[in-house]
Image (cartoon, rainbow over all chains, first blue to last red; front, side, top):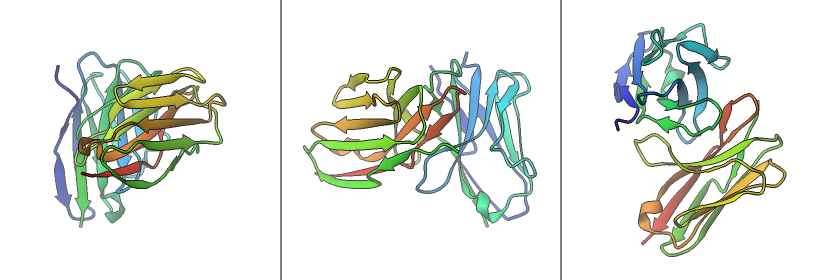
Length: 114
Length: 110
C-alpha cells in the first residue's frame, strides 16, 4: 500500500517568490493535514481537511498561505509571497478518521527561502 | 494554545540501557500518542493510548496514559543503535486537535 506522497522533497526560492507543495494521501483516508515543522521543534498544525472541507484552519496565516483539496483527495498548499521565516519542513499527513490521532505522514517538503 | 512539555530534550545513552521520557500538560486529553521521526522522514506512529491509566507495549516500547489524563511516558528497554531519532508525544483533545510536544532527541552509543 502506497504511503502519503509529497512533492517536491526540497525547494529553494528567493523571498517574495511563490511556492506550492502537493500531497496525495493514503487511498481511502478522508482526513488530510498540513503541518509546519521548524528545525528542532514538533509539528504544528496549519490546516485539517475532512474530505474537501477545511474544518480547522485557525493556524494558517491566511494573508500569504492558502490550501485546497478540491476533490477530497490530493491537496495543495501555497505560499505567496514567501518570507525568510517560512523556511521549514511542510508535512502532509492523512488518517482514516478525525478522532484517533493516528496519522500517517509523508516525508515532508523542505523549503529554504533565501 | 495547548502545550505539551516533553522531557528530556535530548538523551545520549549507551547501547543496552533503558530509556524513559515523558510528556506533561496542564490540559486534559482524550488520547495520547508517541511518534518517532528519523532524519529526513515524517513522524511514524509507535503507540496510541486511548484510556486513562492504560499501559501499552509495542516490542521493547512501553507507554502509559497518565491517570490524570494530563501526562504520558514512553520507555524503551535495552536500547539499540536503530532507536536513534526524535521521539514526539502527541495528544488529542475533545475538539480533535492533535498537538505535538517539542521532541526528545535520542542518541545511542554502540
